[in-house]
Structure formats: C-alpha cells, structure tokens
Amino acid sequence: MVVEITIRQAAVADIADLVRLRRMMFEAMGYSDPAQLDTSDAAAAAYFASAIPAGEFHGWLAVTPAGEAVSSGSVVFDQHPPGPGNLSGQVGYIMNVVTYPPLSPAGRRAPHHADYAGVAGGTGN
Image (tube, rainbow, N blue to C red):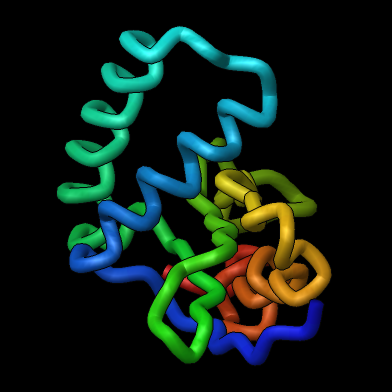
C-alpha cells in the first residue's frame, strides 16, 4: 500500500497522537495489561506536555493527507561529561519508533527525519 505522507515535527497539540502511537509500540512489544498501559499513557502525556515546550523532547510524526498520524520517531539528549570524542557531552537516545503496521513501508522515513532536521548527532539544542 502506497500512501502519501508528510513528516512534521511533533508539537504539544500532538500529544494524543504521540501517546496513541507509543501505546501501539508497547502493545507490539507484548505489554497487554490495560491498567499498566493506561498509567503509562498518563505519565507519557504529562512528560510530553512539559518536555516538548522545554525543547527536551524532539519528535516527528508521519501524517497522511487525511491528518492521521501513522508513524513516529523521537530523540532526547542525555548530558554526559564531555570527552575528547564528544566535547558537548550530549548523547542522543532514539525512541518511540513505531509505524501503524499496514503502512509500515510508507512510514519508514519518520525515524530518520531527525537527522535531516539537524537535531541528531548533537547538532541540535
């Protein structure tokens, strides 16, 4: 199935989509306890609500022409002590890489978009 998608940076207005896709990822990993998933959803929503505006979380969504977010990829940076090979000390952690299964081939660009946007590799903020 070929679907035209747009890759865009996630914003606070996208929290519900980020949480939905994250839950889909955990369900695919075998988590099945609804109460545990609901608790995780609430914690993730609270995290996104503060981390997105603070610039601590960088996420991207693959969105269909109908406006449905079908894939995501994100990165956060951990601060480590600087060293000869990494003077900033920033270490990127890629997470939340998930694509709605029927659209998987079309959504593969989402996780790689961070690199093109100049965020990955410690070049972002």
